[in-house]
Image 1 (tube, rainbow, N blue to C red):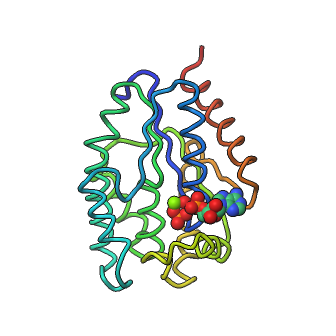
Image 2: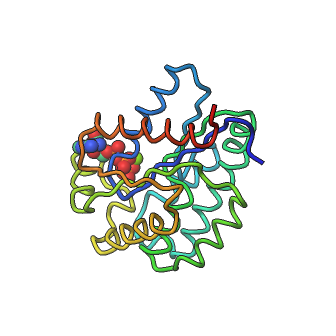
Amino acid sequence: MKAHQSLFITFEGGEGCGKSTQIKLLSQALLEKGLDVALYREPGGTKGAEEIRALLLSGIQERWTPTTEALLMSASRADLVHKCILPHLQKGGIVLCDRFTDSTLAYQGFGHGLGYEATSALNQFTVGSLTPDLTFIFQLDPIIGLERTENRGKGKDRYESFDLSFHKRVQEGYAEVLKKNPDRCVAIDALLDIESIAKMILEEICRKVQQEYPV
Ligand SMILES: Nc1ncnc2c1ncn2[C@@H]1O[C@H](COP(=O)(O)OP(=O)(O)OP(=O)(O)O)[C@@H](O)[C@H]1O
Ligand SMILES: [Mg+2]
């Protein structure tokens, strides 16, 4: 059971669409309101999960098979959920997570072709009934997203080196997630400027809080 007034919000989308930029702005805005906010990223967030992140994000594409990759992602997620996310929600806090289960559906399910059903079942096994209250899905042409990551100047991680067709399938995966979860997911036009997106996100959260905890 969810604790009173806890809120679990996830940010999803392809490479370079602005998730981390926005989640940091949101975290700052909520902290300034005096709220109890915890910010995590996936894969990662705990010591063990950060070690798994390093395994997943570095090295050549063929380093992991799609199935191994999905299981490593899930191992990282299980650690984060049980050590950090659930405890914070149970004490009534707000959890913001930069990627979560929908990334597995989009990247491993669609990008790698493991399929929606198989990756849904894996997600269910990994997190049980834990579902975000709200998910922002950033939509951006992967060509532009990959250009943005290049301009970031940090070098390519393993996913950024996958070919364009992979990233297009990831986009299709996210479109499917949106279609299947219209109450939970909100599409964000990632071409808009940073300030406009931040404003829209805050407005959506206010709407959600009114809906879940009407005064
Ligand atoms: N709305 C925007 N318009 C233009 N550029 C943006 C916008 N939002 C973020 N950026 C820039 O695009 C780059 C990628 O942004 P960011 O790192 O937030 O994306 P991300 O979705 O977290 O990427 P990744 O999938 O690699 O984690 C950064 O250089 C950031 O400053
Ligand atoms: Mg990021």
